[in-house]
Amino acid sequence: MSTLRDLVEEHTSLGSEDIDHLHRLAGDWQLLSDLSFADLLLWVPVNGDESFLCVAQVRPTTAPTAYQDDQVSRTVGGPEVAHLTIAYRQGRIWREGDPVWYGDTPARHEAIPVRLRDADGEPGGVIAVVGRDTNLSTARTPSQLELNYLTTADDLAQMMADGTFPPMSHRIETTSAPRVGDGLIRLDASGKVTYASPNAQSAFRRLGLPSHLVGEDLAALFARLADDPLEGTDASARVLAALGGEAPSRKEIEARGATVLTRALPLKPAGVPIGGLVLVRDVTEVRRRDRALVTKDATIREIHHRVKNNLQTVAALLRLQARRVETPSAKAALEESVRRVASIALVHETLSMSSDEAVEFDGIVDRVAAAAAEVGTTASKVAMRRKGTFGVLPAEMATSLVMVLNELLINAVEHGFPEIDGVGAVGEVVVSAHRQRKELHVTVVDNGTGLPEAFDAERSGRLGLQIVRALVTGELSGTIELRARPEGGTEAVLALPLTKR
Image 1 (cartoon, rainbow, N blue to C red):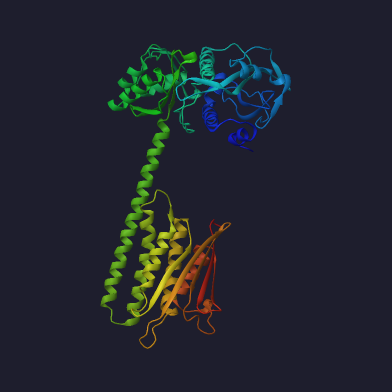
Image 2 (image 1 turned 45 degrees about the vertical axis):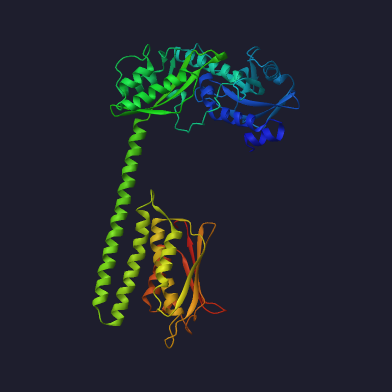
C-alpha cells in the first residue's frame, strides 16, 4: 500500500509544503471524524479536476462507517465526484444533494475544501478536498452531546476550509492524546464552559470539582484545582492561548491523587474567534501504572548494581586468597575463578545502567577481550580485535555468553601463544559476530600454534572447555565446534538461537 506522500507525488504536482499540510491534516482528522460521526476521505484532483484520487481515509469511532472497503488509491470521476469538483473549484463547503447508496448503506455526502495559508497568514488556493460521508442507516434524533459534537465539527470544517485547521505549528499527537469520547468541553469566547460531556464532568470530579462544569471559567478553574500552583498557571495559560487562536501542546493536571490529560484547540471559523475546544482524558490509572513500572525498573537496576558489587567482592576475596597460595596450580585455578566472576560482574554492571533486561553486548566483549589479552606472558604480544556487532542481547543470554567468550579468549591466549625458551609469541585473536535470521553466529579465531594432535573437545579434561560446552549446549541451547585452521591456528564456531527453543 502506497503512503499518502507516495500517492500525491506520483499523481499530482503539489509541492512539499502542500504535502506536509496534508500530512498534518491526516494526523489530526480523527478528531473531526469522531465529532462528525462520519468517514473522512482525502481527495486530490488528477487529470485537471475531472477525476479525484483518494490518498487517505479515516473511520469514526463514534458511529458506523459508511465504507466497509478501503477507499485509498481509488480514483473516481464523472457524476460521482460532482460534489468534490464544486468544493474544489468554488472553494466552499458543499452540503447539497440527496443521500447516496453504497450497497445497502445510505450515506450523506459533504465536501470540504482544504487550503494552506502562506507565510503571511493569507489563505491560498484549494489543494485538496475532504469528503465527509455519514452512514445514515442508524439516523435518530440527536442528543445534546451529539448536537454539540456536530456543531463543533462544523466549526472545525470551516477552519479547514479557511486554512487554519490544523495550524501550521501543529505537532501530530501520540495515541495517548485525548479523543472525543474521552471527554469534551466547549468554551465561549470569554473562556466559560458552555458544554461538558459526561466523561469530561467525571474527570473534573476526580480532580475535586463538586459542581457542574457549565458556567465555570476553565482557566481560573485549572489554577484553583491543581496541586502545583505553577502547573495550574501553565494549564490556565494554555486555555487562554487557545482562546487567542493558538494551538498549545497537551498538558497534564494533577489534583487530589488524580491526573487528567488536557488538550486545547481554538475555534475560529471564518476568522472569527468564538471560543475553544478542550479535550480531557482521565489518565490516573495509566500514570499510576507508569510510576509503578518506574519504581520496578529502579529496583531491578539496584539489584543488578548490588549483584555486581557482591561479585566484585567475591573476586577480590579470591584474588587475596590467590596471593597467599604457594602451589602454582592452586594459584592459577583461583586466578581463573577471579576472571570468571569478573566477567559475569561486567554483565550486571551494564544491566544496572539499563532500563530493561537487555544489554548492548559489544562493549562487554571489548572489555573481556582486553582483560584476556593481559593473561599471556609479559613477553607475548597478542592483539585482540572484534569484527561485526553482537547488538542487544537479553540478560540471561548475555551472562552465559560472556563466560563462554571469556574462556575461549583466555584459552586462545594461553595455549595458542605459549612462551618458548623465554621468547614470547606475537599473534592476533579475532572475535566475529553476525546475525542470520534468528541465530547469532560467533567465531573466535587465532593464528597461534593450533590444536594438539588427536585433540577431542568432547573428551578434553580442561575445566574451561567443560564450562564452555555446558553453557553453549545447556544454557544457550546452541552448538559449538572447535577445529584447526588450514593456515594455522584454531577456530571456535558457535551458533546460538536468539529466541528460546
